[in-house]
Amino acid sequence: MKKIILVLFVLISVGCGNTISDEIPDGAFIDIKLDDIEVFSEVYVSDLISDTNVSIEDYKIDTDVIGKKDIEFYYTFQDTKYVYRTSVEVVDTEAPKIFGSSSRTVLVGYEGNLCNGVTYGDNYDGQPECSIEGDIDFETAGKYDVDLVVTDVSGNSTNYNVSVNVVEEIASNNNNSGGGNTSKLAFSDAYSKYKADNTELGIDVSEWQGDIDYEAVREAGATFVMMRIGVKLDSGEDPTLDKKFLDNIKNAKEAGLKVGVYLYSKALSKEEAIDEANWVLDTLDGETLDLPIVFDWEIWSNWNSYHLSFHDLNEMPKAFIKTVEEEGYEGMLYGSKFYLENFWDGTYDNVWLAHYASSTDYEGYMMWQFSNIGRIDGIYGDVDLNVMVVD
Image: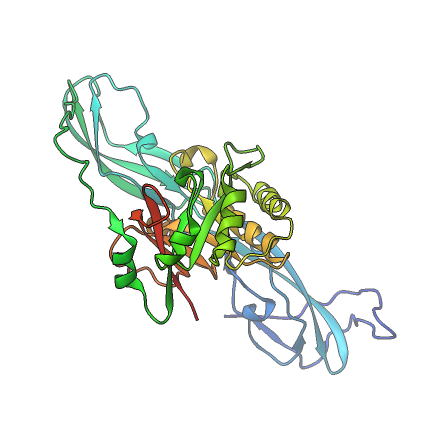
């Protein structure tokens, strides 16, 4: 803790006769307890102060940029207003994350970049550097252990050990004797397992399900349907309307099913996500929904090339959700369990979890998509099955 003597500055008068004094008030003190603030943290002026006998005009400090941060706030002591200025350092102490296989097999003569075989990212730095520590002779077959090291702009590093097998030939896997025997999940079985006093069962659909008999879907026990309203074919383009959306929303509502919509996004910026949300709103044109409008972003295969920080990534659904909620709709984020736990930041009120399993230990979801091989009357072929938690 450091005790800082107040430094006062002459300012112009404010309000009706309420001037800000340049005199040092006898007996006033403010103890500042922080020198550093973590980037993106939610910190108010009052959080910097351990003890004071003055009245602080509190506000949230902008912590979005690392480096020196000048801070100014007003305070009142014995009915006189003063200004106080200090500075703190906004720092990033969080190390990057690396995901991927701990082993890699390459052919003799390999000239690629091993860093491209893993996914890595950082909370602040959209372009952390990946390097290789260790020796590999790509001209000689053998097994080599190396470290992939990812370092962000603040110097935080993460090491990821990878065993590299350099081989003369990669064996092909032509075993076609199985793999096509996956059991389908009947909606009736799912209903028996997951229906409770606080849950409802439903489906999600797109044009891939073709023509749907929603009366049969409702009679099977489903109470809701999430439907794709559109899909972004490429970043920077407008979304394309799902070919079956207009039929789906009309027929599902007529059958008495609760309806929500999702957009398959390929946004790469907050601004693009807002444009997508506005496209959804324009397409709905005031159509009422029972369930949320969902931001569905799943383009993970090229993650390293997007140069997004985790903060940048999370700004997209938050902006999308805020935009639709300003128009009276609910917003929601869709994500698989892995990405919800490792990429999305966990601050979303409504989450649609994708986890294809008989049970899940992920907490806090509103909907859980538990199967992508469901079968229900009214739909020919596979359909995603979902359970929704209700009040």
